[in-house]
Length: 326
Image 1: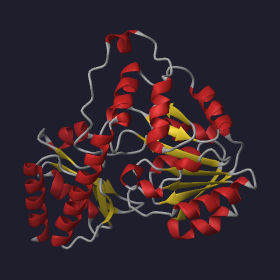
Image 2: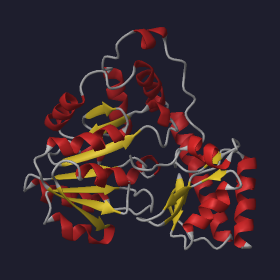
Image 3: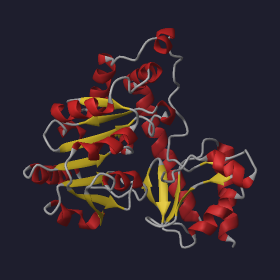
Image 4: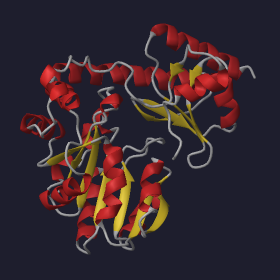
């Protein structure tokens, strides 16, 4: 199993403390105020809710969607829907993509963002994380749609992971996912701060969504998750307020890091930089109860999400100050 953020139990066992500021995931620290599920949500088998699909299609502006148990479920399943293919995965990016395309007989290649254009005409599948996790790199919608058309002409796919796309909706190509060969992944966990729901959506042509649904099987999304997500996806006031709030907090994080000599990149939900001594930085923060994301090899560096409270911001600033003093 690959290493991910959010592993606070591991941190507690290693460092013997429980007062963690968790900056390791990039999940919105101010999550949507989830309502209490109805008794029926706990009692009944969770049949698909057409109202949830309608709300999700409106929010993501997608013509058709399939709810999945987090985008991770789709990442694991999509490689099983194709015969062995030549697959280019943007790198460095979310490692689960490359990992699972490598498990099912595909010829997988890791391709830097700057070289993806050259990979489109020599591969059957191209996987792009946009905006990228962890570096924040982006590809324009116009470029993505051009790639999708070129790949489709040869029976190929363009898979676009927009898990962090809520804060930059202008980058999304979900509205175009009805065209064959374009597959878009969206996550409820990041922007809405509801990672525990394990809910995401796949936008694609109906035939591919049907094949994916058959592969994943019935009852993939719990009843409580469907009820919470339906309310969150319909709550435009909360969405607008959160967009504005994250923009302010993301800017604050980038300025705070820059004040201590750290030039970072990323999104309003996280910042990343190629730290010269990432293991030392990670250890320095962990000793102070701040859990950040360490990248040892690909994207070698550090990623931090947003603190939840003002005392957490001040504690982070103090730790950065101490780091800057050596």
